[in-house]
Image (tube, rainbow, N blue to C red; front, side, top):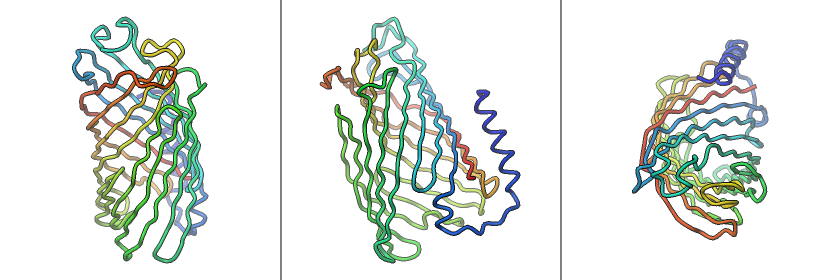
Length: 294
């Protein structure tokens, strides 16, 4: 475990112990504005680039400060390549990519239309890059209307979009929610881009499994061996089986076993024209997430 990860864990445990005996008396408004900080670290094991002997494993670290309305996050990916000379891209000598970075700001705009209808709009701006931030900026949008059938069942309809001058993705969103955010028994969100099923063993312990789709466009460096000053678009389908535990009202730990179901990426040149597309074989991984609410 890295020193920074260990330090964060120790500090979070310390602060959670200070609040372990406090009873919750906060209103919904108070909860929506209270800040929380989370740290997430994951590792996806070595997998071959399809139709080649070259392979790669990936670690990801993410820190986020947010409340229910606003947030800022930083994400770092580190890549570990094997058989570089057998990869279908790069110069066959140097690692094609060592690190990628992403900085994102987002805002959520909730609105209750009626007792049964709820509208949520989320907008974000972000920069995802290898070394230089120039031409790395994009924006995201996510919006849906939730129709509350009863206290346990809700239907959600909407759309999400990731905008980037090189490649923009727009897709519909639809899901069915059952007892979402309840602290006892079964809960589920079935749909796209996220499916999630959880079961509360007690008020502090939740087991869950699911799948999520994600997409991003990355600005490659000016000296990239893949495509100088080019871009890389990645699309991932990631499954998980995990458990989360509320250490206290303020501190939560979550651990997951991961499975990268499908990973595809397309390389673009500096002018934004698609060059080649590749896939990475499925592989397993692990993830840990620590969340502290102030």
